[in-house]
Image (cartoon, rainbow over all chains, first blue to last red; front, top):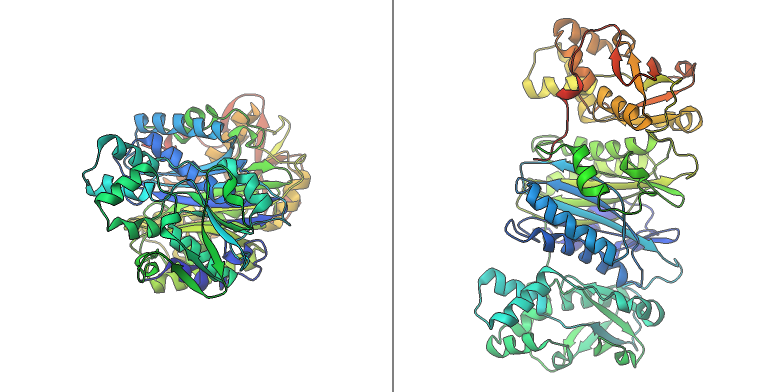
Length: 308
Length: 308
């Protein structure tokens, strides 16, 4: 089994001499001159399924990408689309996908400037490369948290993971709440309104695409610090609170499950006064992540990307 | 069946308001400020096969991409890699692929700045997005051929297509010549030495990735002109000449078969004096492409990309 972090270490960083533009491959963005770049790939059977509504697939592709940039305080502006069309594709699918794609491009003020299309008899794979203007001296990295920082998240945590679990495992739950959680999984809502706050106030930031703990761990290891958070402080929607009261074993899961596309950031005290921002803990000199009000063990080992 | 050109018309151009940066989607590049961008996707079972040497796959990915930029007179400089790892991938494959990948990055002076990796149980799909500095007022487009222009190509034509045919259909041919043609198919050699000539002398240019006639047709239709070429003027390697003498039906095929990654360009008279450049015809006011010394019919209908 090859972990994603080892893949980057062994195959990407190792052969690359100049890592200034890649920020040493420690963040999900790259910088050239006055633009920040990010790219994301989603694939049938992994990030979406053949019976998913193409409208939601288009929105997920765009929003997951946007999330990487806005969590660094960058407004995305241009994008290129790689469309590897699989056997599921037909005219109806394309009509629906691209109607939704262009709607989202418009809502997020994005400009599609190019791409490539290939046809296969396999699964559909979609990549989007996205970039926006940045002041290259003012990049909010993962590695720049300070030991005196407090830890904040945007929005609520766990909705997407529970939505996905309900959808995949057909867990019984209140119909209306179920639909809301599934839609949070299918169509993330990146916090574009926080871009300026991140740029002006945060010391370190990342989006939460790989799970709160995993992304917090990335901030900790690259910043050479640890963290203490309170489970009870983590913002949860009323649907998630209700779900957790019925299925207690999911408490751990919402910390390691991904797809929320919220922003996790560190900075000085008082940032919880901003809309949609909650303080959940603080950075520590002591390495590792401690959850002060729960007795969860070995959480991070439960979640790693692997390549084979 | 949906043709690639109709896909771009119906799904890409239609929803995109601002097409300045995409050059109206008529060229395989995009321009933002002082950079030109290009992106290409290759997939297992289409552009490479599970038993291909990973070394050649890495080189093909990089070189097919470079080709789009250098055929516009642009020196590529930065790239992002989307690696959708399929079930064929193991450590040995990765070791070999990335060794070759980084070798080529170095030879072409490219800087890998970022990317994304996902793991699937399906086929491997690889995209590279590549960009390099450009004087945005001096882009050599497809649409800017003049009716008085002569038509030129770089290198030799047909090697890759015949190499692919020999490989796939196991056609009998002289062993040494066979290996040379197959290697031209597997590992293209973009004419980086012609970048300056294109930038300074050409009026219109494109790479020949989709076949000489198809790519010439793109210049003709976007420039609202026609073309006359001579089959006998088309530069052919001694291996191709020998192959055609044995398999005459391939004469047509080398005009519509792709993968040569040579440059097709138009410009004033006399450019055939440059190394690796051959004059093959001239642009005409009369629409359509005429091959003056052969009686080939409906050649263009033999080759279209389709999506379903």
